[in-house]
Length: 316
Image (cartoon, rainbow, N blue to C red):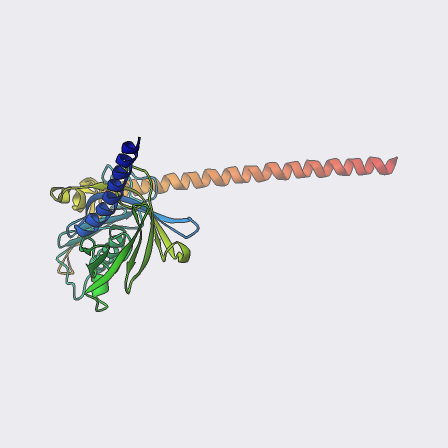
């Protein structure tokens, strides 16, 4: 019996060490994920928006979800893009999809970036905070550990403010990392779930400011690893939208070289949608009018009924 208890305790200790080590190794290596789905929530758990993103090497994408899209298929006639945010990067190329408009910025002038490059780079920094499990000031995958302390490179956003690297440390309790402190950036507390949709050792809930001084939260729902060889598949915008509906615009060195031209299929679809919405609006108006007539008729009949009763009462 004693031997079994010792064996169980040893196994549990090993599992706890593995969880912490997995956390450290994850942050020490550049992330390569085809998909992470997460929600930005308030401290009282009100969801402000849900997004899907991916990251591998210099490439990434980030898209706000509406709930109507099929993430396993490209944008098409039958898989409309209603996202208000859909941007990405493939190597030195930045891109944005808005409706059926695909805007590509090839090797932008970073001293004076165009709007698409600027938006893409800003959103990459924001997504980087999710992959870094907290801070927008640090670059994912650049942690160098010394026990539970670390040094980490600054993100492009932090470098603009003069930072090069940050010092920090983690707090471990019950065999898991429960807190990360990045000096000069902030504090993040972590909670874990038993779901298999997130790699072992990584948290499902990230609280900025700590649990006692919450500023905001991130709830991670799914993380799917990828391979560097999959970079073109997941981050090339041409794989994210059907060519038959694409309205293409291309910039090179932040100068427009391909102007967008109307797409007959998209124009036809837009007209059909407009006519459908117009018909629905007219039907709704007719229904509303008919309902008002019925209500007014009932009110009139009721009023007449009360009048007749009042007249009869007086005659009595």
